[in-house]
Image 1 (cartoon, rainbow, N blue to C red):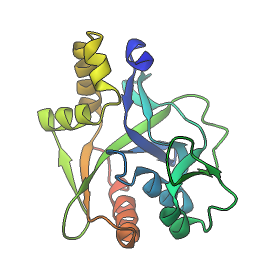
Image 2 (image 1 turned 180 degrees about the vertical axis):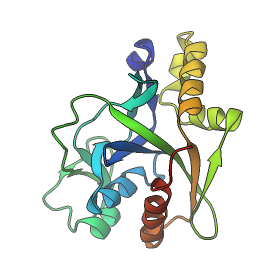
Image 3 (image 1 turned 90 degrees about the vertical axis):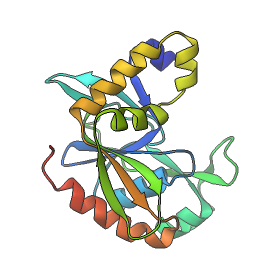
Length: 202
């Protein structure tokens, strides 16, 4: 609630950076945001934040994401896929069966990281694919993934949230990342993202 009162945009998303440009992955709890971010970090991306991406307007008419605590929450299945046993890890308080996996965090992230793209993780059959959203479709999808949007509405901040979301959707590409559930598809999803993020921003 405090974040909304401060006029920033908290998206239910995890974020990494590639060559200094942020890539955010939004989705409901259990969508696989943390697992995907951890997999990308293993392939050379820089960790920025997990679960909540606090966005703000940056200089030069861009959007930035504030860095968060250098760890992700993973269950034992995800840990086994990415890093091995959970035996030496701290349990994530209040989250049954999940553990904090430390991430390497660059000391350069003392200010918001410029954001380049937002992916909305979506369940779907068939091969992993990406579909770009525009206009009201992008705005509506981002509102659905806004953290504590109900509290913002109760505080009379609906217009502010809509304005911030519309600004983000205007500046950044917003895409659906559609993939089947299951860690057996993780490698293909990571490779798809790596190909897509190499494309020039529209």
